[in-house]
Length: 273
Image (tube, rainbow, N blue to C red):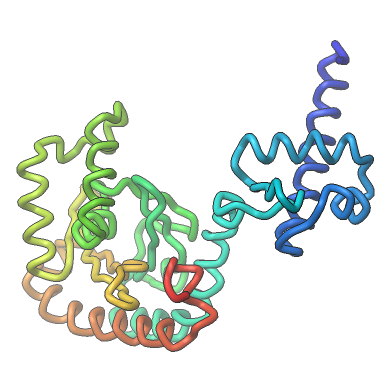
């Protein structure tokens, strides 16, 4: 083993590159033997074998001992889940998102869940003249620090909600502990389920910023959230809920219908066969 740091770094990068090459070939083929993978990647068989053992240990692939073939595992397939969601959301939401942004002027965003965070996938912040603080796609928001996160917690399955709340309760991250009173939080989530939407307010540079989120559903499953942000000094809560919510619910419904009708898109959201 080289003792020089640069030499070790080069070996690590080369091993990672080779492992990714193996994973890419296996993912495209669905199944392959050691000999097939070594031949297609151009790697020596001993090297390919060692890399495959590492991928097996990390649960990125599985092995059929009877046939001596390797297969991608769910963890490998999950590597592309964010990309797949982005791709299908782009195809099925862009038109409706832009139209809603033109009507309401305030910034609109679509987010999906990733553990204890919500990830902004699409938004109209660049186009909106009223977006004081612009969020870019990829922005990560804590569940309890966003309207989209609270909505997702309220609308996901009871088992998933319990798991997420247990993680939040055990976390030392102050951003996750805003609603530390479990009973109070459960009451809030009950209200969100009853209302069908969630809100969140936080201090802003010139005014308190408020957000309202509604669910985008496919086959009764919440696959994403649609959120509008606005300044409380410019729009009262009553006016926002009266004027914004009907258009937001209708836009979310249209997006859900489009995705439901596209059988190719469903697996990206854990739906379909």
